[in-house]
Image 1 (cartoon, rainbow, N blue to C red):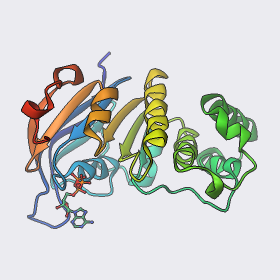
Image 2 (image 1 turned 135 degrees about the horizontal axis):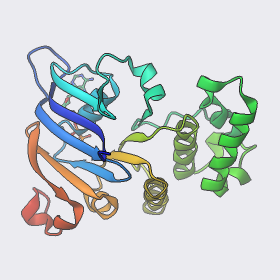
Image 3 (image 1 turned 180 degrees about the vertical axis):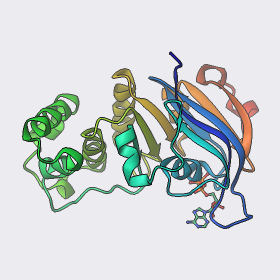
Image 4 (image 1 turned 45 degrees about the vertical axis):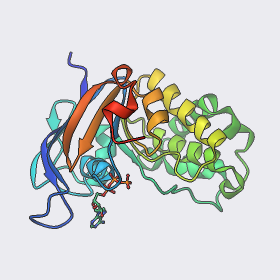
Length: 237
Ligand SMILES: Nc1ncnc2c1ncn2[C@@H]1O[C@H](COP(=O)(O)OP(=O)(O)OP(=O)(O)O)[C@@H](O)[C@H]1O
């Protein structure tokens, strides 16, 4: 059995015809690993995730999930294929309770109340603080906890592969740490994660494998353990 879960194959994509943001990008996310994409601002890291999820259709190349091209599967159906996307902007409904937000993640099996209960319970096991706060309005939770609600809601559909864009943007160091712990916990549960993060050092700490982009193309790749000398490897001071 191959350990490749998601593959971006020779992918060129952009927002306007004939204007590639990414050119001939090749990237593999392996089962049970955190793969991170690094590169300067504006190089196209978030664009790669958007294309993987189908918000943008590649001009050229393919998006392959579990060995099958998903390029013709509309975005809203990709969750049924086990692919989920956690956007940069938290998308929780702040006036709804934590539990109501989680229930929304059960949309695809909304009539199966036993399954909904089971999945919510799994989230409370995973994130005990959410059980404590389950009746509270989500807007009253900390930023890190709101991220937990959002990720918990996504996990209701039992994705195998998570595309995670800047999960700690706008969070304090302590809350960001909670989010990183949450991501490594999900990896340890067996989920496959493709992560884009501004916090290069933090991303490298939790990642298993790294891709570095430059000018919209592959520049380096390798196991995270090889990326110890940041100054040599990147543009960062
Ligand atoms: N909706 C859009 N329409 C047109 N151009 C866009 C859009 N979103 C992003 N771009 C452009 O695509 C390029 C890549 O943006 P992207 O957000 O993928 O970069 P990034 O590597 O994730 O950057 P950052 O680290 O700053 O978040 C940028 O030049 C940006 O201006």
